[in-house]
Length: 116
Image 1 (spheres, one colour):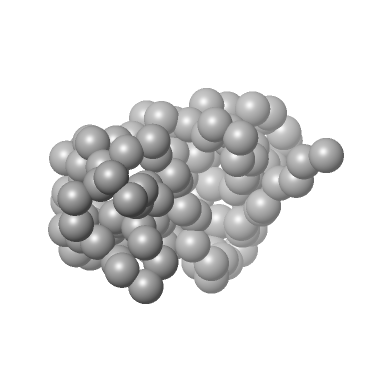
Image 2 (cartoon, one colour):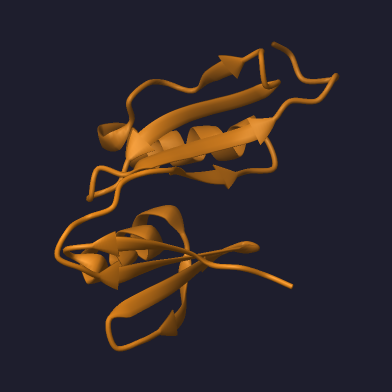
């Protein structure tokens, strides 16, 4: 079983292109007014609409801190903060915004052997 999360967007093609070019997703399915992207095992789509939906957070999980840092280097101009440890959830992460103003998170789960 699987699922897809959809978001309404006034410029869905530009947003889908951003996720492919900047985040590393691929187009899983192109429909008449929707683009469905795939990143690892996550499916998410953007559909043409008269208003943009920005609720929720798209979280991209990496294998390690280096992966988070690489995303930060690519997306620093969109980042809200620098990567840091969030002890409450035992993660290393940062938040950024996509072209629609939607929140993105890039994180890795810390392991007991990881320095804090």
